[in-house]
Length: 532
Image: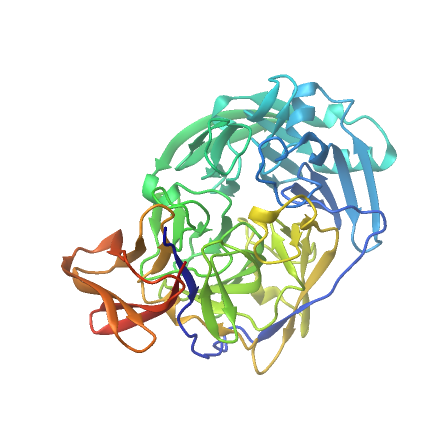
């Protein structure tokens, strides 16, 4: 059997940032004594201290069903951290009702803090009540200040935590946000049973494919929920483990942007698009492809009202592409990366993706969180107002937790020691610089093509997906290293939109290098391939 493995692709041009972002990024590190590593958690901030809820204490989940998401890796304690004083407090959950205790030990809960209340929805973990791993059908509210005091002082937690059960909240791996006073539950999936990578019948999974919206009022901590019309789109929102950013659109309207995530409905690879969300619905950004930071990672949103631009910084994590000495590499194993990506929403409403020269200090950032500095001035949706920055150095906040991997690709060899949960805290600074950040524009982020080439594990063929802006003639070829065309196929009329095409490649010699060439509207796109 032959498989086509992608080695490398398109060269990045070296374009600098515009003067609308005259800063460079700097990272520091903080060690808090006896603070263990954690990832996939929920958090809230109050007066410079953090409340950490749920998450995992181990590294990347293992591929064996019996070992994946095991009980030993659950975080079954509430943790309070003071990053300035470098102190940590924690307490167990045993005093809480079992249904609350189980949800607060889960991973990948959707969460948002507003007006001193932390809202927690769903999450995946083991339930002794159900005698299995489930996605929890709960909404839990926490009085952040009072629970922090209880953790620090060793007093009762129960009066300051409330939970309701509703099957609509059985979602994990999505995102939660407030927009126009309404609660938005964006994307995610329901996953019940034991994980396995071969899709054997040990679990049931249903993607939300929706933005569910709720009007919510609190009577103390007791939520009164009214669902308002949802937005459902299998093509746009069949995704999980993505980054959701708050945004101020060029019109001045507050909204949200969902960046990348996994998995495409018909293909086991990440999305390359971004989805705009507002009170009227959702829509993919035209002519944009995101090549970095595909899984959830620490991220933050900045808005510059003077230039009417929004900036989104994404720190490390996992992505199908990474940069190697100016070459954009596509790796369909979707590896851990050190990439710090930067997406700009320009005044004309178009997105551009940049790559910062600064990298994360290791293969880390996946399912970490960015915790903003308490001194910053956010808009009502959480985006940070850059016009309020003072001085030449600004502390934006902290990257905390996440998975630290020993190598880029460990999934198929992972036995529990190849990765771990990070315990380090990384302060993130912006430092004013006349030379800007030195970040480089990825020109392929703005051509609208969204080209992805990938192997098929069953057939002897190259598959490639792409998005066309208009009906076009298309030719795909495999070219040998001496310039000979060994396989070629022409499509006279390919309609606009997203689609997948196939180039058969049977009877090719094994271990031979080829160049994949796509000819479209007079332009050529090339990627190097290897037959195994």
